[in-house]
Image (tube, rainbow, N blue to C red; front, side):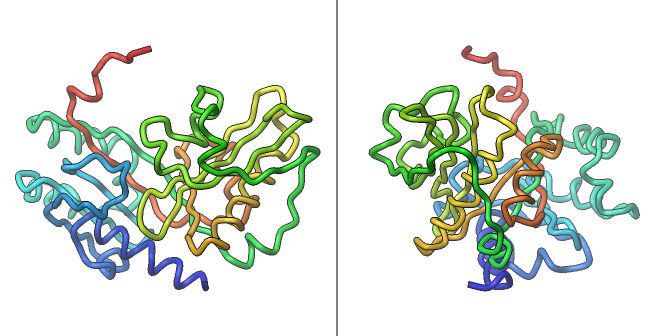
Length: 259
C-alpha cells in the first residue's frame, strides 16, 4: 500500500464520519455539511455530531447539526488564515454560536498517518524484550497504567498489541483499536520508571508494522499540546495528516468525574 492509497482511505472514512464527499477535504474553500448518524463512522465519535471540524491543511470541513449549519457557515467563511479557526480567540467566537444550542468546543487533536517507507525504513529498538499480544492477553491489562494503549469502554475493539517486558514485568504497551473498517488507532503507555529508554518508539513502530501485515492501516492521535506524543509519532514513521475539533453538549462537558 502506498502513502497516497493510505490518504485515500482516510479521506473516505472522514467522508463517512462527516456526511460529505472525500474530495471536500482537498478543496481550497470551506465546506459545511449537515451531520448524519452512520454505523460506519469511527466508533469513538460522539453521535449525533453537534459540530465537528476537520482540516487536512487546505481547507476546513464542518459537519454540524442542521440548526448550526447557517451560523457556522457564516463564522467559517470570514477572511482569515485557516489555522486561526483552531486557535483560542476564534474558538471563543465558535462557543458564542454553540452555547445557545447547549454546546461548546471540547476535544481538539492532531492525527498522524504512516509513511510506509519511513515505518519500515527505521530500525528502532529498546533494551527490553518485545512480545506480540492479542485480545486474550489483554484481559488482565485494563488498568489505569495502560489506559492509552487499551480501551476498557470498548475492549472488543482492542485487536493487537506489542508489550515490552523486563523479565516477566510489562513495562510498556502499545495497542491498537479497530475504530473503523480499515484503520486501527495506536495508543501507547510506558511505566514512568522506564521512560526515556526508546521504549515508546520501539513499541509504536513495531505495532505499526504488525498492523500493516494484517491488512489494516495504523493511525495515531495526539493532543496538540502533548509534545512527547507528537515526537514519538514522528520518530516512528508517522507524519502529520489532519486536525480535528469536536463540540459536545455542555452538560456532558461539565459532568462530574466518577473518580
